Image 1: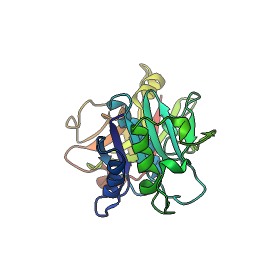
Image 2 (image 1 turned 90 degrees about the vertical axis):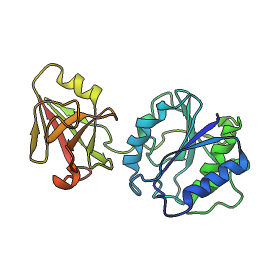
Image 3 (image 1 turned 90 degrees about the horizontal axis):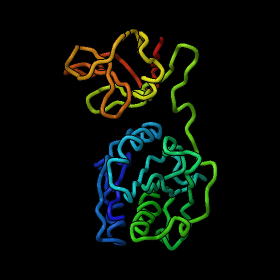
Length: 255
């Protein structure tokens, strides 16, 4: 467990991400820390959930993924740690891990005072709980040493698309820095739903009857991006700004 990744909404203006690294390295100076991003949309747990699901498996087994987008820090929500498919995850139990939860996923609380800082701030659990927990885990501590099992972890409402009759209902869940609108409709779900049948994809007032493979094929396109999800883009433009699209906007696929 020599790699720890960090995903936060802390940004780079403030010292918060750097402080977390300092805490980790003060406990385990041999660990490798990888910044996924510190520019997740502030307080947008839903966006972070899709980001985690996109990147975690590109690392070697045993990697520890710390994810913190935590608008309810200091509340009764629990700090948690768990393993899935050989990867380890640490963060708040606020729905940020919604896309990783299945019947075999066992969460544990982080409450053993030996593995957290002696004085825990009510506003900076990244520094005082999650960073030290990740460092001690990287040294070989077991999940059961951190705390008690946590059953029924938080799952965000309506995070997955729904199918009603011949219509697949999804939504825009995030934008990348190019302004491309990324949805919660995965390529696998799209293919299973449409099969070889003609379809119409709707977003706002726009309609699409086919998927493209690259961004330059047309001015306004719908395609499956590298994230594995349906997305919309404008060639050399910003779909979000130019088409006035927002997070949560409806996307439908009709057979």
